[in-house]
Image (tube, rainbow, N blue to C red; front, top):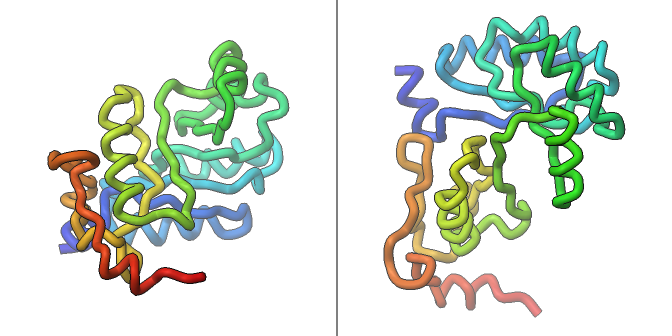
Length: 191
């Protein structure tokens, strides 16, 4: 029963993390959702250093931690490379430019799995359709998308892309495969 409740929302949860409570939070989430439910730990650099990140990683290795996203600043890619050598928990670096990707790759600082992330304020049905189309064309885009259009009061596309067993289906209609709800656009129009 726990698994089906978790699966209704997805099979992975991205969690903002702070060093003082993340281990207990991961433990409680794992107990509640089961061992198959994956957790992305995103400290936004709050783990601060390689030694602190490794200390926390060791305490979470027993759980299904999908990856650490930006545990400490990546101003020294060699530190990320050392983390990868000392912990089985994968790293995900929040990179923005092709140069950053090349630097990380050259230093073996992160795996080659990627995720797509859209601007949270724009997380609506049209953006979800676009993201689904783009993600399915990138073979190594295997880290779950940061897209939560289905949590909005109105996604502006008639609720066309609800998650199905933790995934968002790629729409196959004309264009992006979704129809804009003109009434909802008019209702939410400001200015």
